[in-house]
Figure 1 (cartoon, helix red, strand yellow):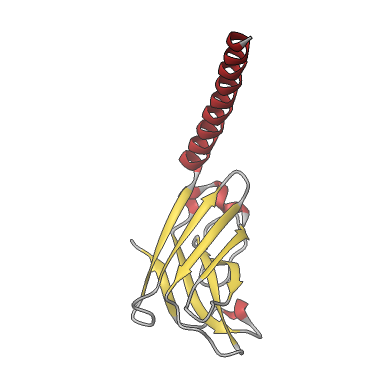
Figure 2: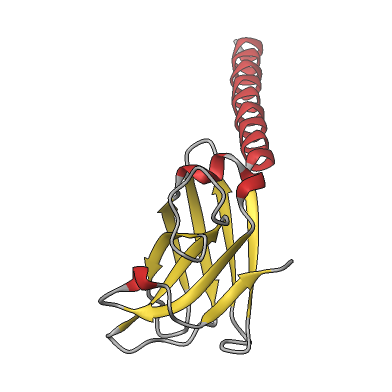
Length: 152
């Protein structure tokens, strides 16, 4: 009877180990597909940084921002995807796509899941990713200063 219990425990542990291995494998495959864009602060926000971890299959990303100054109520930050004017995607006059409007917490941080435009399925079309400071009433105008941008 003790042998039967031990055999059942071994089978259960083996099945659990297999499920964990499968889960790890799926996670690694997903992270291999992920694109990561690292943004650094400009002279307007030298201490700021951000990462955008993109799942191009799901057109979703996790936006993680640190050390951006909190804003007055009439201002917002805008994440832009810069693709240039010669792409099949609609852009503004600067060749950028408004990707996400956001605000930061009191410590200058934000961590949120965001939806992405279709252009993220073709990473070679993305020239830069940037964050600007814009008026809350019209963030699409894209006239504010660049706060963070990806490197060259």
